[in-house]
Image 1 (cartoon, rainbow, N blue to C red):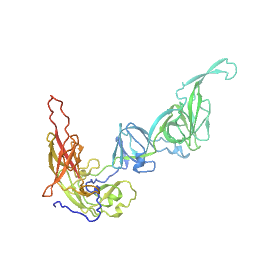
Image 2: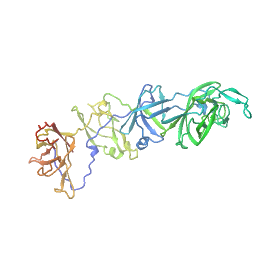
Image 3: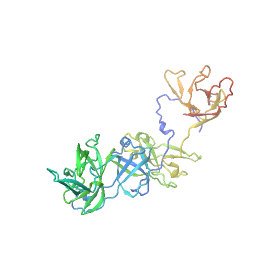
Image 4: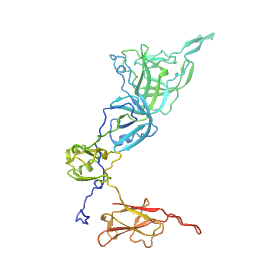
Length: 467
């Protein structure tokens, strides 16, 4: 119960992460995303759940995130009925925060419908339209088409084009027939490259029945050129997709070019999920009661270890971790959340005490006390012993492992305050006859008053020690 000094005759391995750490209630996840929520977690980047892969997304406030529903079956199978695709949604990121290994996105608006999992998403860049989308519904051409012009004729502008493969569509008022995989943009875009993903938004039509459709495709080829649609002529980048929007030839499907939106995708495919939840109330058992965040090597050190839990309100408890090697079998160097079991329920604590973002069972730093910055020398007693380590070349060789802050600034430990420069923040460490340790600190004056002026009163100083 009382502090004791000791020395070792061999190297001693200490684990600082087990000196002061938090435990957390285990995470739980809902099976779907509920309508009305404005916060989601990033579960995967591409096919990886690794921290580095998710961090490489570079998500930030202001990003536009597209939630993409599954493609309707009729786009890939001739036997599927023509049915509507579930709606997509674009959300703007209001905040990105990191909680241990969780990347949490909060959006400016709420999600407007429920989503089943997995929920696919992409970050969006620029958006373009189909060349000719702004043409008038009718246009005039000279007659005859060749030779001497003798008059003019009015034509209805053709906006609908076919989607199925193996067909170059001549329906539109474009000057060239349009292959199913080619989309001419309404401007020249010089920095697009093959391999870029785009989300193509159209309104799929079959027998005059149409529904919104959004599909992700990869660009296979690009060509900068000039194009003519009805009476419009201008620069364009022809985007050729690696696969058409409809991948079979069983039925005829059309889309109006005025409905086309081509969204640039600037991230890997993401999988999003609901924000982790946790149970509430008292613990019924010690099995799987709490979790530790850290590496596998750190977590394994908890096996058979006696743990002292202390709450800021004074509650305290000692438990033994009864987890075994099987519980830490997952390999890999990255930190993660590990579920722990104990020899008894963690009462009188409740699950609310182990919130992941605001845990209340902690070991706070030691505050030595408040002082008066006007005083030249002030001494504070340390409430517990100081560890000394041997450092070759130091005189004396035993160097205390102690950091002292005064008014938020780290002070330098010196052998004596005598002769120290007036602008250097220093302290000395002394041991009394009873073995107690004392810190004497000399704060640096905030300013030197000019001659003839009054000296301002200094605010009380605050010393804090870390062990």
